[in-house]
Image (tube, rainbow, N blue to C red; front, side, top):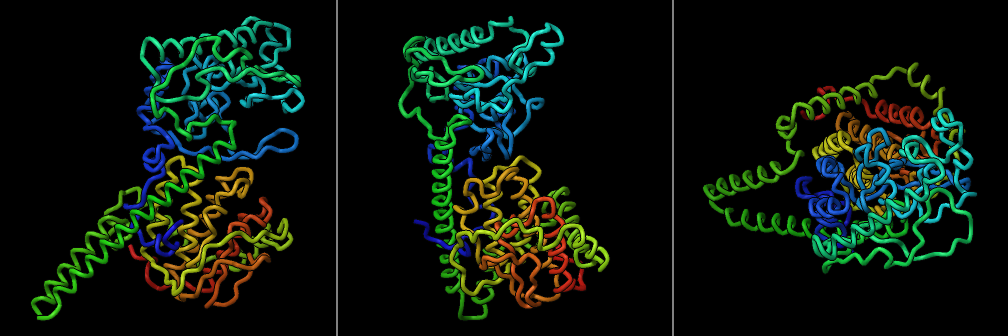
Length: 519
């Protein structure tokens, strides 16, 4: 059970917060990345050139996809060649042209990285039925033009080079050779494998009850190609095939629990350090000399704390040139919210920001218990926004974004939606990461308004199950939308709707005379 509230967790300096990847490895949910890639190379020596790319782009969660009734999917798309998943280990989302797998090895990797694949729609699930393939009946235009025959693949699979009619035989030969090599490497040459990787061996035999599409799994006895041997503690629950959504959800929950445990452990140590520092401070009270010494020690402790975090007053001056430029742009953009003319606002509202844009009455999500006596820490707000801007420069994981949403909601209002709710499958729908970032930007703009405004109203996270996206109660009480209220606006109108709302908030509280938030 978690021991600390969101408000308490928000006090932990950014530099001391655990990293997802460190937690996933320490908790033995994932193997150490270099060791994993060494093991991958034993199966695929041709991937040595991909090592650096993997180290920079490894991930520990897979973005969620939503399958529609017609078999199509919505949400971030996996690479058709590698599935954005190397032997069970997620990597950053990318498309086929950007896939790091060498072109000469792509067909084999496509054949052996998962037990099955469809050469038309790139589905990787074991049993991909013909009547559910959304590309059924399609064919390779290149082969049709050159050979005057219709072949069930797309050119990027590399199957154009395989003799027509023998594609299935060729793919099965690649698989059989891979399984034989795995058995040989683990039993005689290299010794037992240290890590179990997806599709090391054929899946168990099965009965074909319906017509399968693409290249279904090998249907052979499990010992046909020899036994793959493993050392002790070779199983890692995070190494899950791209199509195994249930197992992936279980791994994600394990990581989340481990992360909160690590976070609370570090937070406990931090609070103990602060308490010890306070006790030391009291020892210096009494005489003027001791009081001065105590002040010096207090200043030193404060300096150490601020040095560990970008929340210090001089944190921005110590930041990189890129960070300073990014922050300056944040300030300039926020200023335009205060200065938008009435005509501009009316234009925005006339082009989408209407109540009729609400798709449906939003569901009220699960909330954390509200922190009592919440006060807004400007330095902490700045650190959150700056950290997010740094993260945006890289490929982000969904869970990293929801954690930032969780923290910023708490920092602004003293309350937040639960991480469990924010990470709920299908919560953000198709293009989920895009919607997460867009919602965070609404909160980030509000954070800038809070830091730059003359008035200091009370900001609250909506707890009513009615849309409030255009409601500004008063200059002393402003309701901030939850993710569900944000998403309740139709996607085509969402940006202008919430931009208009943010402008109204900014103009209600007015810009301070000084030059923006502390720099």
